[in-house]
Length: 322
Length: 255
Ligand SMILES: Nc1ncnc2c1ncn2[C@@H]1O[C@H](COP(=O)(O)OP(=O)(O)OP(=O)(O)O)[C@@H](O)[C@H]1O
Ligand SMILES: [Mg+2]
Image 1 (cartoon, each protein chain N blue to C red):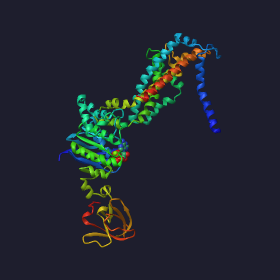
Image 2 (tube, rainbow over the protein chains, first blue to last red; image 1 turned 90 degrees about the vertical axis):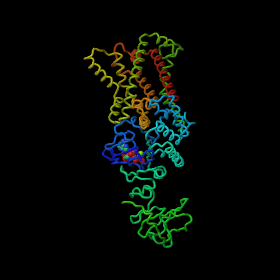
Image 3 (cartoon, rainbow over the protein chains, first blue to last red; image 1 turned 60 degrees about the vertical axis):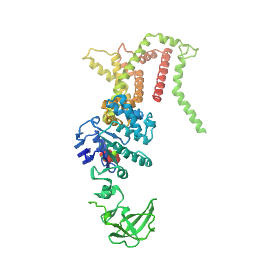
Image 4 (tube, each protein chain N blue to C red; image 1 turned 90 degrees about the horizontal axis):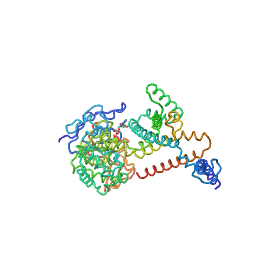
């Protein structure tokens, strides 16, 4: 697959604190690519360097074969959806969307239809004349998205664009965002610290920690075959039993001794938590390790203090390196 | 109940202390008598005020000086505030605020010293231009204070967004930051105009023979003895500024 964006050994320090520490990655054309990592790991710093807001101390940024280092933000064919949306408060939604086209010197006659098509695409026709202060959170987010997309960038940078929305809205907007990206075929570089968001949206994910990349892969790859303990733990709950990682949904418990081929540990039930679609049963092994198993409603109920066997299939063990 | 009544009396006292002098001033400007005994309503002092050529010239000087220094100080102060906001330097902003806490008499004497030193090499004299320069010098800090307060509420990402969408740095300032700052700049200009029109100490030090301002003439008249014309002018100035401030509040509410 053709590469849209290539980062090569990117480095950036703020007052001797190395915030971005040798980042290299390739974003394929038309890909929904996520940078996933905890707060403060350097995601925004990377995005700002691509957009032209802060030069890297070392390394290269190449977009479709063109080196971006040293170019001013307005010379770079990328646009950004900022975390706070940064809508211009003195302009209407439509004027916000027209801003980039006007800066490119397009004729007013050409701008109006493009703005209208964008408003339609994000479903904001009725809100075209509203000021940002009079838009809801979701409408602001869509205005910011439309404003960045209307200039047809070679790549769209999104800095946690859903984090300011309430949880119910976030899930709906997530689906819309993915559909929009598919429909337009624009390369998205999406930043998030929410693993569920990254897993559900992305074609590829780069998991970051402390300014370095821990693993790059498809959502399935990084969830099912995490390369490091950090990735395993960041993408979901893990039971660590003698250095072996098993996810709760792959962990079983039973009173009877499990059959051949299963790895088994003896344990005692501590608590059982009802989560709606399942139970999480927390047990303590004879070695004193806490192990959580996901149990369906249909399974036999467990009471606190029950002596049980905790078991799993060898194939479900997470293949972490360390 | 008892405490409530005491507070009411106290508040009335404070208000009276603040506003009764203005009321007395206003009332005696319409008094037929030259002295502080009420003898009946008259517009005589207002007639005299408008007939006085020296007063008219001083008022004109004050207006020209206030307008010129307001335009210059507002432009310079706004750009300074913008630069300081971008650079975010404690040192630089601190040194500019210094001029707010410098006693006026010190500012005035130091400006006079500067002008006299410069005049050794340049064949120029004290006059309107030196007064305007002096007023610009002390108004900038006021403009800075007001515009900075407005900038602190602005989101830094807005200019980034403008650049990101293809605006140059100048366009980002002109099309995004400046419109957002407009109410702050208007308030700053009003303040600069007020402090310039009002200034006596610094102005009297750096003014030349042709550049007497209204406060200077008023001061001289008042020193010569009770004069209802002074009350008349003061009333006009008070009402003029009151109207100006109401107007600017109006403008800020519906821009
Ligand atoms: N301009 C700056 N000056 C000094 N330190 C900075 C600057 N920008 C970022 N940092 C520091 O660099 C580190 C990484 O910041 P960054 O904003 O890239 O994190 P992030 O991964 O985007 O986090 P979040 O998920 O919270 O947005 C943080 O410790 C931050 O304090
Ligand atoms: Mg961030």
